[in-house]
Image (cartoon, rainbow over all chains, first blue to last red; front, side):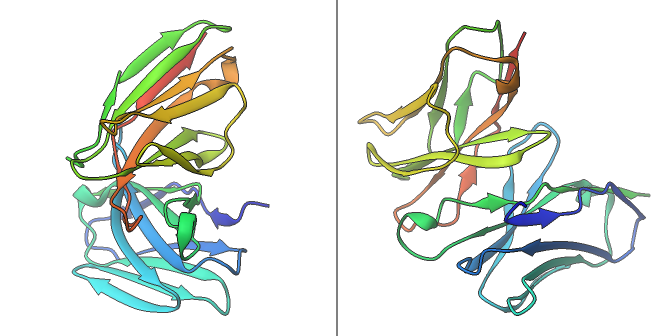
Length: 114
Length: 112
């Protein structure tokens, strides 16, 4: 079993829809939870991150972490065609050499059609 | 643009061969990380260097090795290549805090 599980989709939604992307994780030592966006033929870019449980909002994007259920979510409001990409959830431990040793989900391919 | 530069963008080679992938981190970043992305395994951490020293190891095969030079650029050496080594190899860098990671655009390796 992978430490971070993510439904690869693909997910196809109309422009303006609310998108919900989800991951589960199994390692209780994970403290930081991130969402990366990866466009075709590009490297992953950090969208948002949260530390421990809670919500974080940035414009049209909201990240949620529920440590009790080990569930990670990303919501995209008013989705745009430019949001079409692969979304990767990732987690790592806290401190020392754990920071950069990210464990990624498989990634969900999202297409927003006009 | 993340500021992380990887060369070459594409590499096609035969089984049994050896290749070197190169990474220049963002200006000022001391940490370099190597990740492998394949269809079946997803994005996996291979190894981290900090200011020239190895800091952490992940699922890196013994046929693979890396180093970070005094000018902070890094190289990933892959030897005795197998078909299964075909993948995207990403380099990322960070400052001394270790977060966040900034990824380059990868090197696509095809082993035939």
